[in-house]
Every structure is written in structure tokens, then in C-alpha cells.
Amino acid sequence: MEEITFKILVADASHKSFSQEITDEMANSAKARGTGIAKRSIEYVETKMEEGKAVIALTGDGRWAGFCYIEAWGHGKYVANSGLIVSPEFRKYGLARKIKQEIFKLSRSKYPDSKIFGLTTGPAVMKINSELGYIPVSYADLTDDNEFWKGCQSCVNYEILMSKNRQNCLCTAMLYDPNAPKNKLAEMALRKDFNKRIKLFDRWVRLKKYVFLKLSNSKKSVMSIFI
Image (cartoon, rainbow, N blue to C red; front, side, top):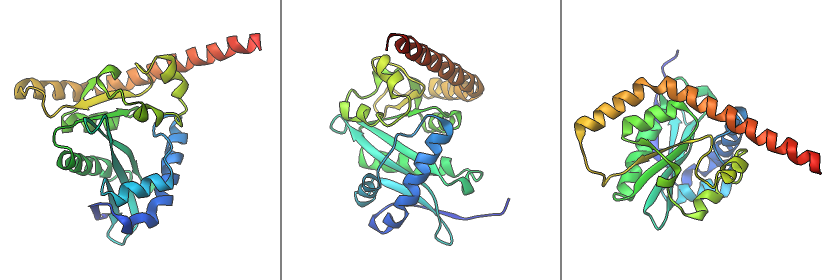
């Protein structure tokens, strides 16, 4: 593998020229997985750049390599690091981890007292989150801000989410709480156990996807009988 250097920067208006490429890859990635990143418009991504609430990864020769942005919910009580995407050309360089680290630092800087949460179907992202101090939680521990959940409407699994009253879906919920009591030994043990069981989590996510999609398709089949 050739050695490539990356610059990971806080995005600004000068990076708008990459917004089309970023949103296209978000859509392509979600389509390829059949789940994951909800659709975002070019205008939305550019607004995040203008507000300084995104990080962008560029190669040494100026090519776009990765992106992630911050969303705040519940009047800033909750923060999400959303839309993590890496260009297919650069997915074997550990870039996702570096981007997550930088967007996490930016989130802590802008919202030091906020809980940072994420929804993901990817075991690799779950492992990165765990390294940053996130723990798996129930959906009830996330924001109840309706605007956040509206963002899931463009996801192919939105019907499943709503059928579960927003309490479960294919994604795994993870949360970092800066104000939680700190017990370093327990925290280290939890992360070690989570990392050790990442393959089990991956199998569980796939099983959940199989069960939810099977139930969803069964409901559609029943409905078609009465139409």
C-alpha cells in the first residue's frame, strides 16, 4: 500500500467545492449497505462547513478523502457526530478513526457539557466509538428531539424505527456522557470487554437486521392480501 499523507481540518466555506462529492458518496455508501447514513443535501453539508461544525480530510495534493459533521439537539444537551464518510479510494488507511477523533475533539470543544451519541450499523465504527469512551445504550437514552428523528426519514429502515416507537432499529446506539461518574478501572474493563466482543456485536447486528427485515416483509405480505 502506498504511503499517503492526510490533512484533517475543521471545514469552512472554502471546502464547499467538495460538497457534491461528499453527498454523492454518502448516498452511494448507504445504498451499498442497504442501511446507515440518512440522506443529506448539498446545502445542509455546506451549512455545516460555514458554521465550523465539520471536519474534512484531504490528501497532500488536495483530493477529498473523508468528512464528518456535528449536529446539536435538545438545545445543545445532546450532540451527534454524523455523516462519517471516507472516499472508497482511502478506506484502508485508518482514516475513519482519525476523522472520528478530530470530530470528537471539535464536539467537546464546542459543546463541553453535552452528551455525544451515535447510531451505527458498523462494528468498525462501534469499536472506534468505544475507544473514545462511548458505551452501548438503549434508544431511550438518546435525545427525544423530534428534529433528530426526522433526519432518519430518508433511511430505508425508517419504517422499522417507527414500528418500534423509536425504541429500536438496525442501528446500535452509543453514548459518551462527559458528566457521568468516572471509574477508570470499570471504564477500562468495559472497553476491553466491548473490543473483545466486537465480532459478537457484529453477528448480533446482522441477526437483528435479518429479524427486523423479515418481520417488515411479513407485514407487507399480509397487507398485500387485503389490498
